[in-house]
Amino acid sequence: MTFHATATHSLVPVADIGVIIRSARNARRPRVTQAKLGALIGYSESWVSRVEKGQITPPWATLLKIAALLHITVEDLAQALHPHEPEEVPGAESDGRVSGPAARVAIHQVAEDQEDVVLRRKLLRAAVGVSTVVITGTAAAAKGRQPVFTDPSAALEAALFQPPQADPLPLDRLVLALRAAREDFQQARYAALSEDLPKLLATATATCDNLTGHHRENAQAALARAYAMAGELAIKTRSGTAWVAADRALTAARASGQAAPLGEAARVLAVTMRQAGRSHAALDVLAGACATLAEDARPAAQDVRAASLLTAAYTAAHTGDRSRALDLAGEAEEIGRRLAQGPDTDSFTIHATRAQCDAFHISIHNVLGTPDEGITYARRINPSVFTTPERRARYWTDTARMWARLGDHERTFAALRAVEQQAPEEARRPSVRALTADLLYSPVNLPGLTEYAARTRAAHN
Image 1 (cartoon, one colour):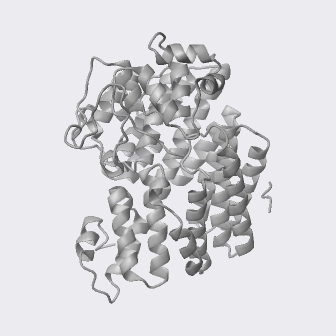
Image 2 (spheres, rainbow, N blue to C red):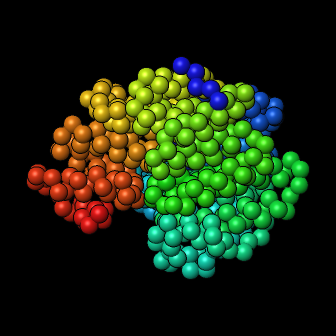
Image 3 (cartoon, helix red, strand yellow):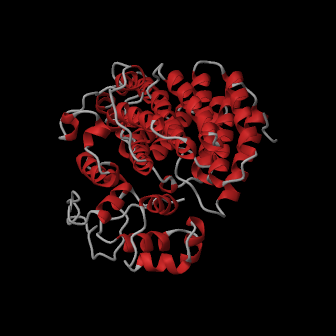
């Protein structure tokens, strides 16, 4: 039914940008050759070879393209470009993650999720070339003290209604700062993200105002993604600011003239509408976005189209339309299969991988009242294939809902514990706390549940 109207890698910091690029390129599956990487960024195979040998240092804009294609993190870029400012990785020597400069070692998921925020900010400052205050907005936060905002909702209100003063950034540095914020979202570091958003949004706005022509359009695309990310955070915290963030994301996306940011903004608006009980209207918004995205064959646009179709499938389930929900999910999965054959993108929250589509089927059957049909999908998912803690936590949340609807309290609690293990801040989301509270006040006695509820603030939900 047509709807009209891979692994992310983290590198141990090394002081050689060529080694990082070569290691990340060889780690991709399917493997990216020097010729293919060169073609994707507009350079020759021999140029890529010279970069990897350390004979050439690419310009910022090119580095950002390479980083996006190979999933090189902001921290690695910063450390490689500033090798004389070494930073110690907590626990590096004790768990065997450190080796020679040519080594590329995957960091354990949970240890990576708990990465030191101060280290992240120091590296970001080096990479962006500005004071950390420009990103966090406060000197106290720059020194690693207690965040100004402990409640993400309060920070979102400040970002949207009381924005701080900000100066423009060069566009490539704005994109890098936005990517760092996106990593906070993907790592489920919502408190840190909420600290950065007020100044980041203000800086992005100032950058747009300072540019003209094509550069301004690209800055508007970055601003749209920043507002869409603010909307996603508002959705997670059930903040009323989601409406404002989504509207501003749409305004900036339209000004950019680019389909992918427009589709992402529309998806955030549709989720906001669905949470407000307006699922049919949300489907109309998603239909229009998918129609626009269908005309843009570029992978980034099709990636967002697939994400929008998955959101539409879940939304259709809320209207009780089983056939439409399953058809839309199937269409998204087909697009995901096609995208898997080409370069993937990492700008957005949801990618229509097989595992992600399976996870959405669990959600869809939970809403349709047929959670037993979700068991098949849950059993064939290996949670480690989800490339971010935010997505892994979302999978465990959906699984917990499935077991709760089936009356299996032990498996429900096991899934909730997995949410906390993967992303502690996800376990404190209002919807997850409500699920914990239901389990807490059910007629069961599960060892550790009371302590879990207290840690996640669900005891008085």
